[in-house]
Image (tube, rainbow, N blue to C red; front, side, top):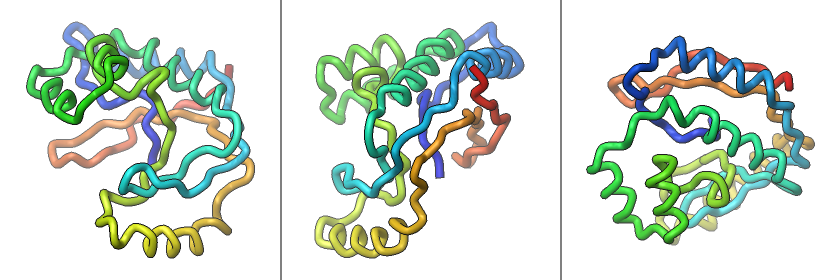
Length: 170
């Protein structure tokens, strides 16, 4: 399971993985851990995900810092990727984020979530939600603390791998 704070990106020309790792370490050293009231199972369209309970302002500030501070390392998205994202019917704010930050759902459009399912058929959604509620609710942490960030890499088969985990120590 994971939650994305800075959307996936390709490394910009002129930067190395070591440069990005150093920037991640420096960023984590300026950010304090984030404590949320907890998590709850939520529908996001036809997906099920875990979403925060309570005030999300510190979490949103952490995500915004990730986007802004690490953006110099992001290579521009290929035109085909921009077109694919625009085909989803973006709002003007989301399109501006796509142009500026390479992804539509950042900053004021960001919604922290931990995805649990793929897109479910409408008739199955209530039953899957009920089954997950029964199993997940007793396991969900209260409070929920984010005390580190992970830099992940994607291999040629589309699988994520941990590169390094950075403690939030600011």
